[in-house]
Image 1 (cartoon, helix red, strand yellow):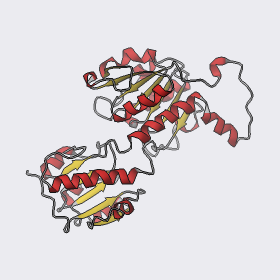
Image 2 (cartoon, rainbow, N blue to C red; image 1 turned 120 degrees about the vertical axis):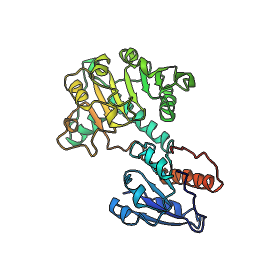
Image 3 (cartoon, rainbow, N blue to C red; image 1 turned 30 degrees about the vertical axis):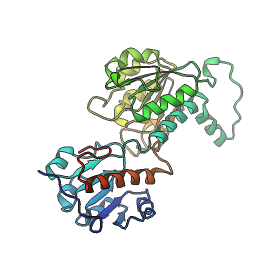
Image 4 (cartoon, helix red, strand yellow; image 1 turned 180 degrees about the vertical axis):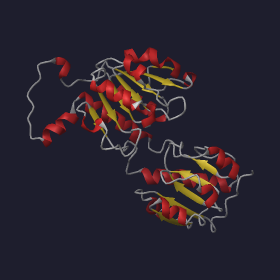
Length: 326
């Protein structure tokens, strides 16, 4: 099926759909003259699906909208991840799709570095002690004390935009940075050395910290499983700012409980929100954040930049979109 043509600027209607982000406010400040409206629930989005030519969404997206939104020409994802979109259905319907890849790369990399630092300096236990009004004494066992990062080896799994930015930050702390990427010939960027994903198991035993910044694909689902965890140092830390399904969560919980790895900083889980029954909530060697690595005060404006660029490309009849998916 041929691609649907975007209507003119004065006819275009955009729907912004997100539970929290103030996309409409950010768009209004641009004074584009383009019609828009905002919804705060999936039900609202589906109820108004006959109106928009463009939908800007992420978590609210339902593939049924491809049938329910007859005017839809283009979907600008608010998120970098696009696993929720049925790409083949988009192609069949002639609807274009672009991601927000890179929109929060700095924020995610800084969040990963924050988790690395917090675990090394035991800030999470410090906060627990503060809440309990407990002044912890000095620790005699060197292995149980706070640590420093200089000379440690950081293994970044997925040296894309986020991974490369994390490598830059880690080098500022005098860390040795190795990384994997799908195509190592694309270069090491800020890392000291880069390898193919297939070499992950040979790299894990040398890593003091393993940071996951890879996308979720069939190849990366359960990438960190019981076997991978068994290859890590007992003193190693795992940082996940990728997707929850990249890690076998049951295997991780077992490894943490049994002291086979030392700690984990987790921003994403297999099921979100994380169920109250999950052992991760109460584990003292886990620092948990609620999928907020990508949160930044600049988020809305960064997405609007991509949206407006893609609208201009579509109006000019260009075949390639920024962050094109379909």
